[in-house]
Amino acid sequence: MGTPIPEATLGELVKVGRDLYQLGMVSSRGGNLSIRDGHSMWITGTGTALGHLRQLDISHAFTDGGHDPPP
Image (cartoon, rainbow, N blue to C red):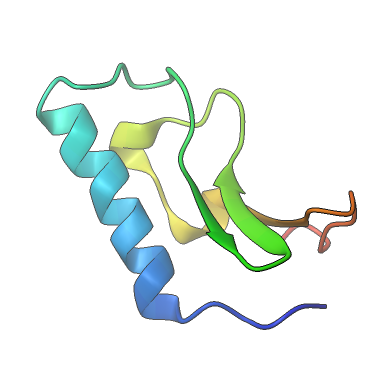
């Protein structure tokens, strides 16, 4: 639907989730992570294990309420 975010950027979000968990800054399933890009964002779902985050766990949503289908 929207402009695809570079795979490397999603990889960085995965790394941040794992790093935050390993440093004890978040619980495994507490909170979420997101990246905003203009009129859309990539966000982890509720209950996602940040310490074991994968790119498949990141959804693409639009600020107008639309979203891409799940991977």
